[in-house]
Length: 112
Length: 113
Image (cartoon, rainbow over all chains, first blue to last red; front, side, top):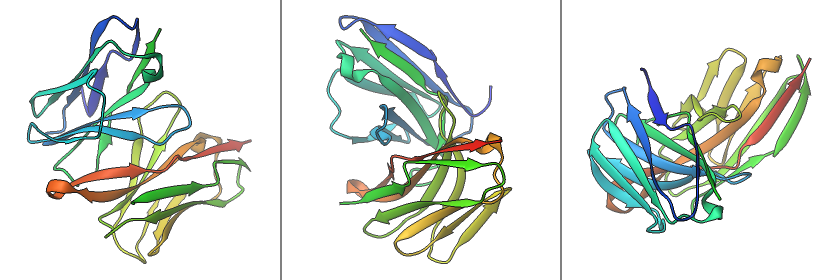
């Protein structure tokens, strides 16, 4: 595997489900990011981790819970989501915070 | 407040018809302007980073330029495979001395044979 990978690529869940999105970067980077991309809206930054420490929580509802166990892996835990949370969730990484960010393919999430 | 505005929202070109996409920005202290290409259902693909006014970067049919208020992505003799959404983003400083990207809404480019 090369670059930034995300699993699953597609996810359909009910509002009462609990699921997790996974991101892995194979670039040796120290910073990782979660973004939300909704139709016809700019990418919205959700969380930033630098050296495994969360440094930004961009006013994201508590039903989204990030986890960064090491510099190569990032998770986004989801619970009791709303239909308006349906979107493309993108993970990115950079050498250090402030360097060029490289994105994964995203997880298309649909909340029923 | 830091802001990025891209225009036009959508652009339709004939193959070989050159044009430019615009990205205007307001940011307190530019720490980098980034261009990405995004194909439907995929993540953004990095194209260029520009750091100072007057800087230019080129890659195949694409050329990015930067002034103090805006950036242009020039597309010369485009081909159908250049069809994608082009995203512009600026690096912004937030509390704690960390950086984040602020994205524009993108320009959807369609190149027809």
